[in-house]
Image 1 (cartoon, rainbow, N blue to C red):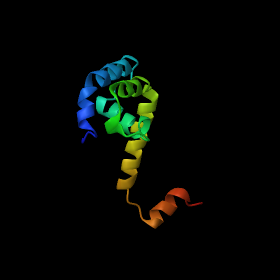
Image 2: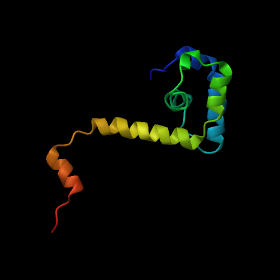
Image 3: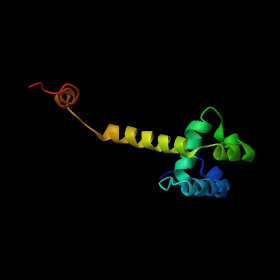
Image 4: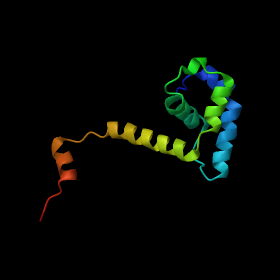
Amino acid sequence: MQIPFSSLYEKVQLILTNKIEEFHYYGYDALTEQDLWKYCVDKVWRKQDVQNLRLHELTSGIFGTTASEVLNYVQMSDFKRNELKLKLTEEELHGLFHPLKE
């Protein structure tokens, strides 16, 4: 997995690890540091120039994130990625949304 802004990622690696350990404590074992980082880049800092964020802004964004937000983001990303792989014909799509009536 390619990590966006990898130099910044390395600077806050310990903070990401700490936040993920918190998520794991509450039972969200499937989340990783990369998931949290990608969520922050794509959602928390989406309207900002990530490369120019200060360390305290990065830290605040990471610590202000909830497990449910990251989990929802990961699930929707996976759903969108898998949706693109699904190639159905027009007839198959019609059959899914308009089942045969007997």
